[in-house]
Image (tube, rainbow, N blue to C red; front, top):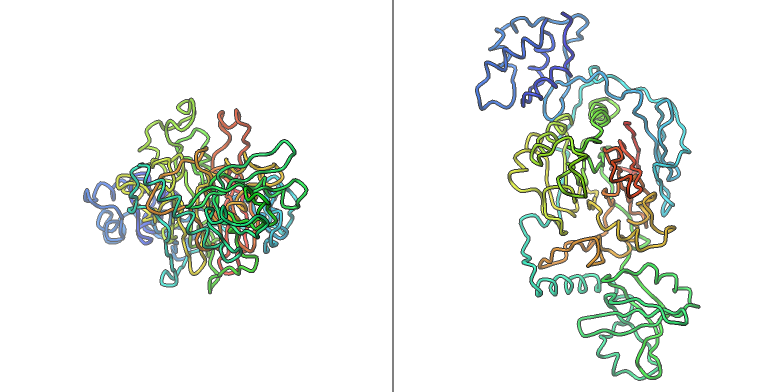
Amino acid sequence: MPQEAPARVVRELASRGYNAEREAVTLLSRTDDSGAAIERVVDALDADVLKVTREDVEGALGDTGGSARPGAGDAGGSARPGAGGVDGDARTDAGSDDAATATATDGTPSSPPEDPSVSTGPIPEDAGGASASDSSMEGAPVETKGVGSFERTVDEALREVEIAGDVTGHSTGTGAYEDFVSVFRDRYDRLGSKLRGRVNHRPTDSIEDMVGGSDVGLVGMVNDVRSTKNGHWIVELEDTNGVFPCLVTKDRDLADRVDELLFDEVVAIEGSLSDDGGIVFVDSLYFPDVPRTYKPSTADRHVQAALVSDVHVGSQEFLADAWTRFTDWLHTEEAEHVEYLLIAGDMVEGVGVYPNQDEELSIVDLYEQYERFSEYLKQVPGDMEIVMIPGNHDAVRLAEPQPGFDDDLREIMSAHDARIVGNPSTVTIEGVSVLMYHGVSLDEVIAEFPEEQASYDEPHKAMYHLLKKRHVAPQYGGHTRLAPEDQDYLVIDDVPDVFHTGHVHKLGYGKYHNVLAINSGCWQAQTDFQKSVNIDPDSGYAPILDLDTLDVTIRKFT
């Protein structure tokens, strides 16, 4: 029989729950009948063994490898680190013809052309960004090499990963009234501190005692927004001392900014007190915002991160072939610098998330969904650093911030030793800070804002508003659930270099005040439920981020 490809050896071992050393896979792939050789090796393993070693193979097949022999055309039998820590996987179908790239030379990625193409470059500052529906990119053909001709080599000593803002293990909220008071007071204090340098803030009770016509500065939380019969706007701002009404007249340029206000966000105004002292006429309105002069950090070497989300294993519409093409590509020379994988939630489809979901499940048991996801995660090169946060389909509480998975789920997904952190969390990779947030609040932003400011087709524009408000979920009481903690983990204290979300199943990216915002699409085809709510997903995309330049390449694997 012809020698077996190392990729098939790896898959066969992974299907039986084993990782393997590179030398072990090499020996097995050289045998005349690798299937029989694998059977003999597995049968000889002790019950507690998880990784097959060269010694295990030689012990089961004999010191010379038993039936193992150098295969014809085997150039030294070299193999590379394999999927999920399984050394030696040599996937020959990686980078297949239907995987292509498109990137941001002008902020506009595209669905791939018929032949694979590539185009790379920076994203223009505050550009309209890009969505998967755009189709203006062209480029030179991509030469995709089979993984059998390439061996990944990484220096893990160069890696640096730090986690901040993770609620996991620190949740203290009981749901009592006092907890809600604490979290909103913390939000007001922290965001208010970013605004008090812009205005001469006076507490609401002090404004009540001021003389009519006085100049007023006020930092407050949006308590109410309503229109008058004349078309003006009254914005009620609340601080720790009370509530005060502020009037934005329709003839002022800032009237359009009222459309950007969400309940419970913190803003600042300047204006003048009415003659009777009962209202402030607003001249200026400020958001905490990202400074326009912000300069993001970059890595000191050429290294890349793949940003994905919404895998949805367990759904009948999970795109297993596309995911495998993606993980195959990670083993190629073209992806040798991709050392990090950041997954922004919804690893599995979950159970009971939306009406009649059970009719669209391929795996009905939640724990089995995670077990299957773990198997797909094993396809990722074992030398890659993986960080993941939960989403609203995952087996964690729905209220945000969401702690990372419990011990049982962590054990199921332990094969790749991924870092499992809360939603949201800031992951700093070799000096580049990436704010990871699943993105449930994007639904509210898109619902509340005019279509030209935020839409599902351009999710990055909704992300811009969260950056402007310096809070990933500013509005309470709507679609986004809030878990009261001793502090507001949803405040964006420090400006991130990259803002990565998922949830809406749409691809979009662009820069806001030099912060790169990416919504990374999904790995699930359109479900019947998505059809009913008119969601057309962007599936099988993997944004690849250059950490040394913050340029982005969008690769498509469907």
